[in-house]
Image (cartoon, rainbow, N blue to C red):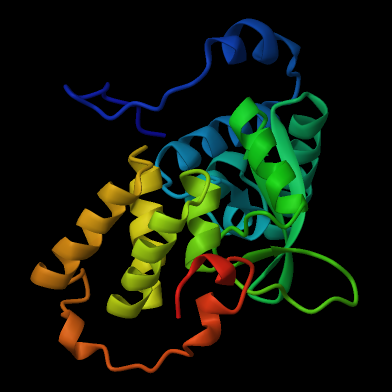
Length: 237
């Protein structure tokens, strides 16, 4: 194996809590668990959105982690499952069984205060990570959150004035733009409707990353989507 030549100047770094080195790692005995935990920290440090998590299907198909664990596919699957179970037992990770696009999967979160709060909200159907829904036998999939729920989940208490602005935004911008703008603002820790509105206005003028302008979107929306739900009484028809 060729030896490593050293880290270049201005190399990217991955933040890790100091407690990982002083409290957690001294208790870890399995080398695959250590490699897996470090790899998950690295993956999540590069991920946007809320809450941040990684799924088992992502991990088992990750070429870097596969090379780190080694072995044939069946052996690697067994090693990874054991490492993840150990990381949960050691208090490094939190686990939630979810449906990903209609298929069962396991999601793993870092065991930190913010992630615990997010996990509780997912379990209580208060937030729905993109493409993922809590697995419940015999129940129909839950719908994605509307614009008012997005605001309440990510910014704060809804007021009648804000409700009017949200209704106008829903009439002006495509639904996927609104969801994307919320995700971008949250990832940058800019949790305000004013910031999100500026993102949408910029996309309307300059075009979103797909190059389409507002005039290109002709899709019809049901007028009752946001006025007939939980916050309908706050929105004038």
